[in-house]
Image 1: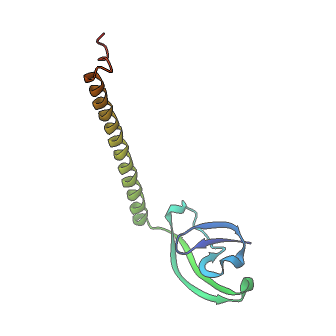
Image 2 (image 1 turned 45 degrees about the vertical axis):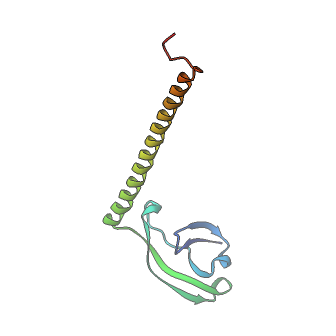
Image 3 (image 1 turned 60 degrees about the vertical axis):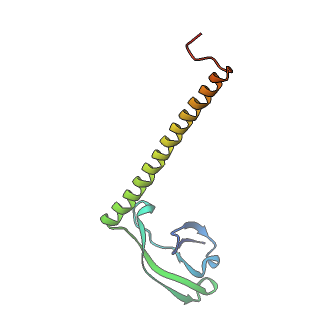
Length: 119
């Protein structure tokens, strides 16, 4: 059993069956930086043939912590995504409020609803 990290997606799996990951797409038991996973990046990497774990291809490389400027890019992108989601939510709420008002006005005009507060 080994911990493995996909070199394309940065997916990390603990206690994996090592022979299942000998296709050149995974680092086997990588040393990971002491930081949030979102700040991991793959350093230079190469794929080598090996007889370890029954043979196959194994990725060799290092996972390192991003620089401050790279972290800023990640943080800015996360903030922009959060801001877009908040704006979308606000738009959806505004649309719902306006649709409700239109529907209420139509019901009042049709005599199916009374004006609120007017008896």
